[in-house]
Amino acid sequence: MTGRASAGGASGAGAATRKLLAGGVAAGPLYVVLGAAQALTRDGFDMRRHPLSLLSNGDLGWIQIATFIVAGVLALAGALGVRRLLHPGRGGTWGPILLALWGIGLIGAGIFVADPGAGFPPGVVVEEGAMSRSGMLHFVFGAVAFYALIAACLVFARRFHGLGERGWALYSLVTGIGFLVVFGGIASGAASSALMLSFYAAVAWIWGWHTAVLARLMS
Image (cartoon, rainbow, N blue to C red):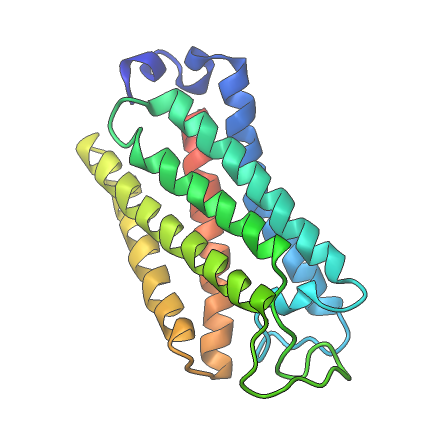
């Protein structure tokens, strides 16, 4: 860590920084738990066929919309905490920027709702090949968010490697590359139950990395 933070982690930079980091730590569990609860209980939703974004549709769609936005705001808070703690040291410039883009992407994905599709919500008729403006912007914000978080994994892999923390460096590198491979498969339009379930697992994994890194900085 930088000299400012090395005396005691986040506590060395002040209680405000610690609270910001705590917000970032909370973002992942909130997103994963609420998303899983909806995916397992919403009528007609099938994790083997439907991406989580489709949960923003229907009468209960406001739950997933709020999940995107709240998780994004918490991720932004965490990014600010990371900047306060690490800047201008190793990883203290691009790390927070990329984590902030992750948060902004989540907020945008909440504001702009994904189009219904693949039979969800039940009973909604969708014109094949059509994509609304909201659906397109949801896709754009989602892509920005995921690619930013992948890049953040690589920035922190370099940071941890430079500090001699090889376990954390490897964890960050494997997370970033692994998620890129799975996300690339989804983005290519390939459709299979195995790939969709792998994507769910990858999202949970990279959120776990985000939580673990911010908790590490807090300590």
